[in-house]
Amino acid sequence: MEEILPVTAMAKKVGEKVRVAGWVHDVRLLGGISFVLLRNREGIIQITVPKKAVSQQVLDTVAALHPEDVILCVGLVKEAKVARNGFEIIPESLNVLSASATPLPLDPRGVTSAGLDTRFTWRTLDLRRPEVTALFEIQDALFLGMEAYLRGSGFLRVFTPSILGGISEGGSEVFKIDYYGRPAFLRQDPQLHRQLAMAGGLERVYDLGPNWRAELSHTPRHMSEHRTIAPEMSFIADEVDTMKVEEAMIVAGISTVIEKCQEQLDILKLDLMVPKTPFPVLSFPEIYQTLKDHGHVLPEDSDLDRTSEKLLTEHVKTEFDSDFFFVNRFPSKIKPFYVMHVDEEPRFARSVDLVYKGVELSSGGQREHRHDRLMAQIKEKGMNPDELHWFTEPFRYGIPPHGGFSLGIERFTALLLNIENAKEAALFARDPETLQP
Image 1 (cartoon, rainbow, N blue to C red):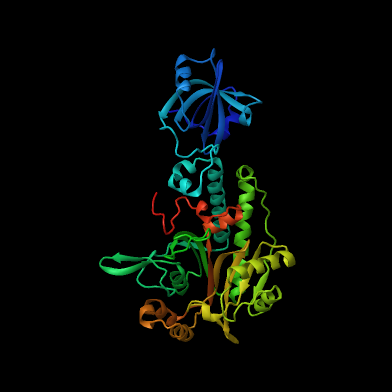
Image 2 (cartoon, one colour):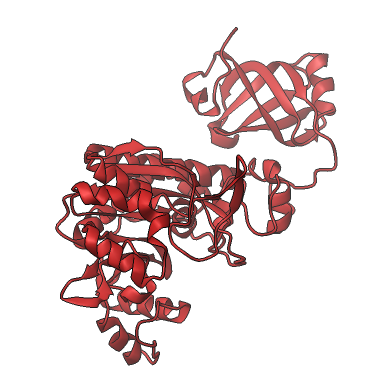
């Protein structure tokens, strides 16, 4: 069977007969000539139908077409300066592979706008919009660049469990499931198993997969299911080593998008720049004074609130002209048991967040690898050591200093592309109200 060609191949096929397939983006019937815009993930091409130059079968088929019908066209490629992309196809045959019902609940052309609820309900139609297709092609390039950097830096991709026998971070924001009659939980983050990979001597790994949080958050930043790219590395000097890897990974991802996705960026009317490195670093306790200087008093030993993130973002933009910055040395009190405290100042932890355009993009830092201190921190957090025995016992048998981070893919994609709601960067988003499609 002759190959069905992508729209992007037409420039090399002038004067040749080709087969193309896709959806009817639009139809214009103009008496002696008609036009069909055929759309697939490669773009849109014009099928020009002169009444005197095509068969009656083609004319009858075109006259009956509706938007979003799936069609197969066989025809001759011609240059046409007035046509979209500079090329057109004169059809020899045109067949409907699958007819679309009318009216459409959502218009992929964007002529009639639709709210987010409608777009997510009819996500399959929404995905046909060129700007949504562009979003996911950019996200794919972002993955590609970040993974290529990690692999080139000696990181091994691993797959950690999504089902856990206990709660790793404390709190109640977990999904409980039935596991052969026993209680189990969907992971919040593949954190602890990445650390066990360090105990196993793998030294440098990364995980790419879903995480779940059962929090009733109704914000543009939160989802009940999201994906992360999460590296972990051994033999680090301190948390600064994790920051160096993260900023290099970010730069690699954005650089790949710029290199491979100019057409998609044009569709979204975006002009991306490779961020300058190193990213600025703000640390506690100095952050308290910085915020105070900007008129905001943050209580001691508390986490950053949204006002703090906004003010620090403005401060960094003014002082360093950067959209990225790290926050380091968070108060130990607010961090999980596995985070290493600063030995000389245990009130603070070697805990790092990356903030981008005013929103937390990742969390990480250096982990506590010393068994005695790890057990002490578990007790400090009021957790039951017996429930974490599976995790802590390997630490008795030699584990190197290590650390890492977990970066949210949908959130990063949305922020990079100036999309307000991170759910738009998920193929099929999950939040407290959405379980289908």
